[in-house]
Length: 333
Image (cartoon, rainbow, N blue to C red; front, side, top):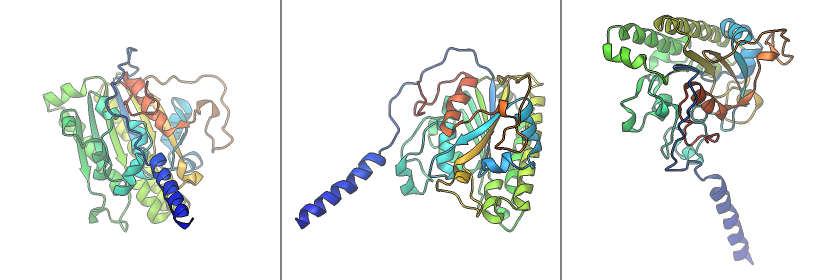
């Protein structure tokens, strides 16, 4: 009887791993190539690491993005899943599926198996950010001809927590500005930049670091948000000017996960699972007529709100560019 009890417990334990620790990635799936006309030629993705919805919707320290959301774009809650960590959040945004559970054995740092992404399906993608995020999507040597990365080490003493957390985002913004300046003197790069179906990805880590170090309701954290807001405004103008304001660029700002009041994330508290997004630019229709304040927010318009799940952002971006939805997306085909 004792041995039978042990056997039953082993079977139950095995069943948990058999059910929940199977990879969601299906191999050898052929992508579906859409036939609709693209709504834009290029998409700029800003991921503000650790930005919870409450910090964007109920504070006024990101005035530019709030104005964009209220006047010419769309905004809403992007609902994440646990674990609310950077790697799973970025995989959901860019690849469209929720993390392979076996990645926990590698601390959410490595790809247990290869998967498809928006970057793979693009003509070209340029990424700026921390190495542990941008490297997630560039492991395959076959991608080197159309995914280009500039990365830095966030653990370098230059960015230690006793320094200004905006330095992390400053590196990204300055690198992007240098890139577009240098592109004007590089014929091959200029040709690539004037292709269609291209993506620019900016990973902004400052808010996550500020949240951990100073906590989300402190002045230091809100100052970091203001810096990010101003930086995104500058990058938008830079890109519009570079393309002579051709009206063919779509912009998306979102976050990989939120954060608790005490500066942590990883579990399923509402502050961790509710993140904001703002979508504007080419293909996003302006809403006319009377507008009403959304009662859950501080002066955000209800008519511009559309909530979604985080993995929905992948097919949304693919639709704007008219590229195949990544084959591992839960909304594919």
